[in-house]
Image 1: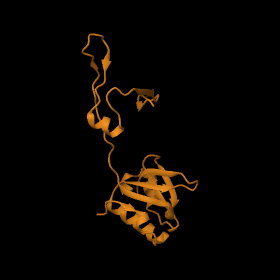
Image 2: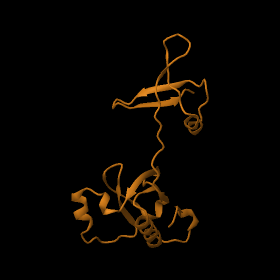
Image 3: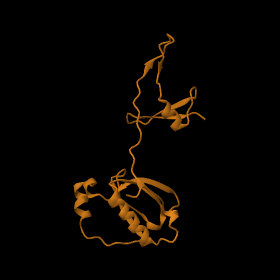
Image 4: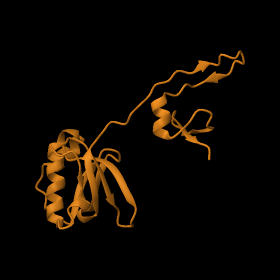
Length: 154
């Protein structure tokens, strides 16, 4: 089973070669993380699949209809957008198996200094992953959907 394809390692690969490589990879892996360059030059990373079991019923029915293959353009289901997306096959940068994002659950605690302040003890591996250190100032941003985003103050 292929663990990752970096397309720069295959400079001689044609659009048809890349199309087949991506198709084969998606047959081996139910979900994948695909990176490609958009027409406007921006890089895009998205979670994708061609596994019909992961498609909504309406899309599943259309998926099984005969499709004309265009090696220049690859159509793929984006699980983040919940829609079909396409990209120029030659603009593929990499594809790798999808990995569930790491999550942490922390409990707010009362500070041990009698102040009544609350503390959010962040796990060491989270701090290391983010490049944060003790005593860094973090900015809390309310995303308006019940979620919060933390970032380090510059």
